[in-house]
Length: 282
Image (tube, rainbow, N blue to C red):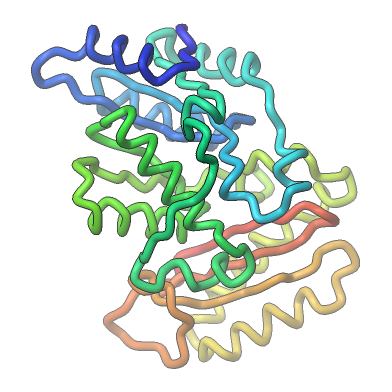
């Protein structure tokens, strides 16, 4: 497996491999790969002739400098994991300089309000950082298909909006959340959980499933109130937000409508580690 650090070398390699009707699948990641990432790569391998995985910890999408500093990085381990799937994957692991060329800052985006909901309320500038790096990577790789996990459902919606508003010729594929046997959504941050937090973290998904069941008979406000009460006295988990939103607009639901799709979104602190999750409600 070849690891490219420079976009010019990557582009030369892609050009040498591309033939007529070759499809390129792309999985952008920040590394610290786990089975959730691998499931995206497997989907890409099954549906494309050529698969590229980027591994880049993007500094401009972190609103917390400590989180950026502590984000797990182990390129060789990531490459070894990818090798268990296929030796034909191309890895792009650029430096900050290669990506940003000395101008490491976000561009401003308008995602029609999607960026102001949920994560946008708590992580200032986060989605400008996401939009900036994803657009740059799409310009570099020029994939036919790009794969993103539904764990970051708001990010997925924003990337679809990015592609639509900027007429980027790439098909965005959303892939289902991969979970541990205990229900905890797989995340690179899970490796930083203390043992006591690992034990209780599955409570998040357990609560989401219960909320889904209650949503069938109770109002959205009642379900939100119930979830907040579940976390109010939890000794090790601190609820940052729980929201029931319209899947299309991501706006908080005030009154249910029969012809709309709803999803519950949650962010929880387990010690200093922030975990997010979501679940379709209907």
